[in-house]
Length: 154
Image 1 (cartoon, one colour):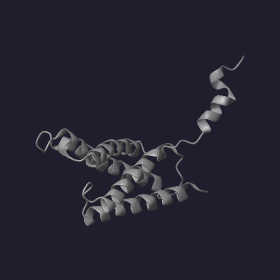
Image 2 (cartoon, helix red, strand yellow):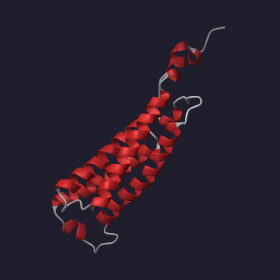
Image 3 (tube, helix red, strand yellow):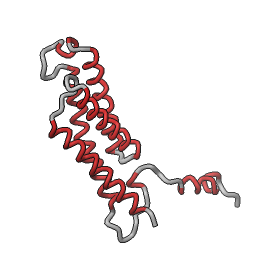
Image 4 (cartoon, rainbow, N blue to C red):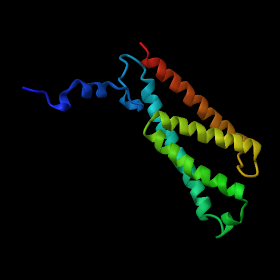
């Protein structure tokens, strides 16, 4: 009896290909399960970044400001708010999916916010507490990611 194309070795190799999604990686036995903690940390960050992205959209749409206030601002301000309205939501989706690209997009969004807040405080206003909070989130993300990667090594 001949094998169907689905049962051929080429298709079996495709299943062995490592995924970039954290929850699809094989679990390490008797480990603390840092990858599980990383997945839920990324999902918590996702919820925070959805709120951050939606707040940028509320600025664009004038939810809490008078009509036309966004259009009256400088082009640099408008471009920055539109950038964060897009990148924050894209990063939030990637974080929720626990994909590697989600963490990278989130790091890009956070670092963009911190750099713009440091060099252009008139466009991106962030207090020192917000900047420390973002830096703490980055440090925790990097630490848990490193621990999850160490957990996967034999």
